[in-house]
Image 1 (tube, rainbow, N blue to C red):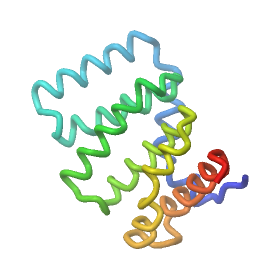
Image 2: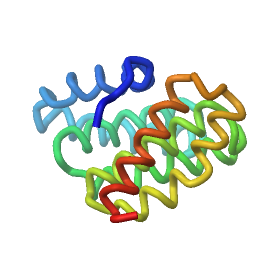
Image 3: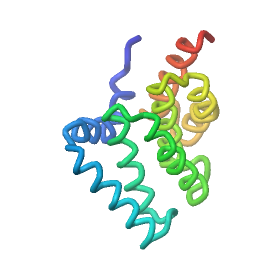
Image 4: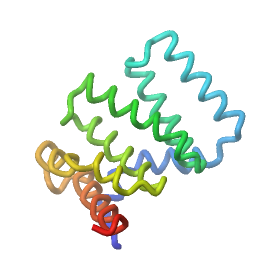
Length: 150
């Protein structure tokens, strides 16, 4: 499967974080987790900074191969964005895309398709069909359909 340059740019910051996260020593991951717990205690679970930190923690876990540990964090990020920003906000669409990627990495292709179901249409409607996230979402959907045998 070939990937368009625009789709690759959609996840540029995520890729950068993943590259950085793979070099995190275990002590840094533990510190990040404690920091997340402290942010939750001080700011609450729905605060923007807490949600951003949770997303970063999920990306770090995923990059270290701990996808099953990362999935609940990606799910919580998505729920927080849906509640605070709505279902069609770019941040929400990106959170859906990242959760679908995590499901793919966990081998849960059908669950990834469920998460991604409305993302392609909503990304195209909100951001335009040529937007990098819309392109990346279409490509991921095709990949998941192929892997799921559909």
